[in-house]
Image (cartoon, rainbow, N blue to C red; front, side, top):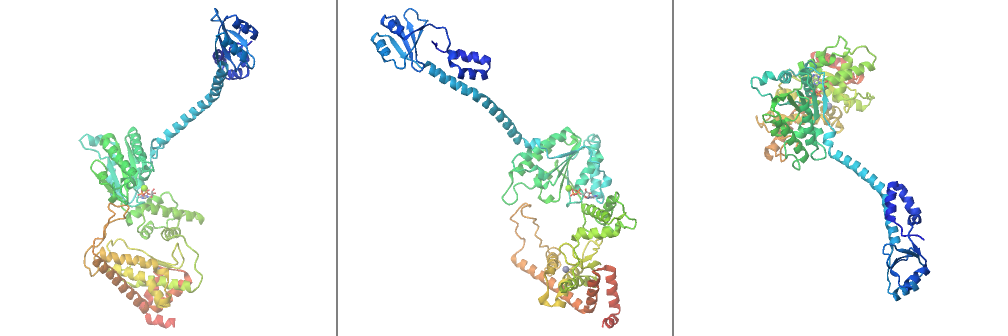
Length: 619
Ligand code: ADP
Ligand code: MG
Ligand code: ZN
């Protein structure tokens, strides 16, 4: 009694009802869907109609077990007949009466289609979720491709709060940069008379001399924003990131003009292109090109000034130094005695310092210290002061801090042993020769308290005002440095000398070589045989050839050896001649651990004045 299910209709109806409902409808009640008020015949009636020739066509649907019967004269009203399981007579009968018949699979097919549709309905939300997911992740991946842009690596400070008064000891540089402050503050003053404002200034100086500080002070003085990035931050593993960072930085800077851009360690990107082992580096070169493009891209008077810092101006790409780019170079020197004093004063401002402290003495004791070293030194001393529960920093803390900054942490004193005695002889060897030799830097102290790698230490107060060093001064330096080994040799014999002199020997060999190849202080005459090349991978040309022949190289070696052996002989002679004095000093040092320079000189002077008496006394 079922009629041909109008599955199509059901489906459209169902859609209106909501697709979740459709599923249950379609799955659970196909019979319901088939309900229809079409007319029907019985199986028997069908045979009658066939035999009476009323049937025009029969469509047999085996799967459903029904047949559609088209009666003659009623083309639009098919009759439905329920069939048996097997219908061989029906087929035979139809054939006998020449009725057209065919087998259809309407319901089965429609059910299959329905199944597919149902599956589709299940899949649809999944696909939807999947699409959503894809969209998300493609967003993420486009973000990943954008990271040069989104993850800005530069810092921006609206106000640095640093002024020129915080920078000391580099007055020449400050003076030159005073002008840059004026450029930023009153560009009209320059543009009015047609002067082109420089775009780039290169600060050249070794680490810790205050380049960053100076750049921040300029921005602070001019009251403009300070953009800073380090050259190494431009360069990433991915090609193109650096270039996009450069673009980004300049875009941001233009939005904030007038302002100052500070590129620290510009040598990280600005190295000579196509140089180094293995040729160029794509990423770095692209970044550099972008930097050059950006610098050319804006006019000098739009209020952006770029300050770059490096300690290796020699390796920079020449394109960077052309007019219109970093055409101004300002040298930021390591401070001299006066400079150090000024820097100490700046950093002492916010610290509690005992009035007995002479900052000048501190400055004198710290040759070669950079501004950063001095700042660190005063900070170390302040920490020591706090640790010792003192109200104000005294010279004691500063001295300890200097020792610590220069030579490392203090170790535990050695226990009495042959080893300690040997170290005492070694150090006294240095100290005694330094005191006896003319033109040698004065001894500051000699100590057996280990520090860092050293088992004992002999400190000198270099006198830097003199600036130039003579050949005989250099030689006495070599002699006193050899004094340690010479003393071990004299007292303990050749077989007992130790590795303790390794560092000494390294130092004097370098010094002696310089005397020969750089200062022309040997029999080779006043020639410079220096190899000008820097480190291979930083420099321009890695095929650095030595500039002189092997023959000359052998001569240089011979000269170096001659200077050293001459000095060693002198060291041994002097120590042997003062053996008793040396023994006395070693006893004193072993007992007291440290002898100050003045006391040491006093003992030496007493002995040289009355050597006989001293001899008698020591007997
Ligand atoms: P650079 O950039 O040349 O390596 P910095 O400017 O970073 O050196 O210096 C580090 C710190 O050392 C500064 O923050 C400052 O405290 C101190 N310093 C360095 N040079 C000076 C100076 N000339 N005057 C005062 N302080 C200095
Ligand atoms: Mg710096
Ligand atoms: Zn030594």
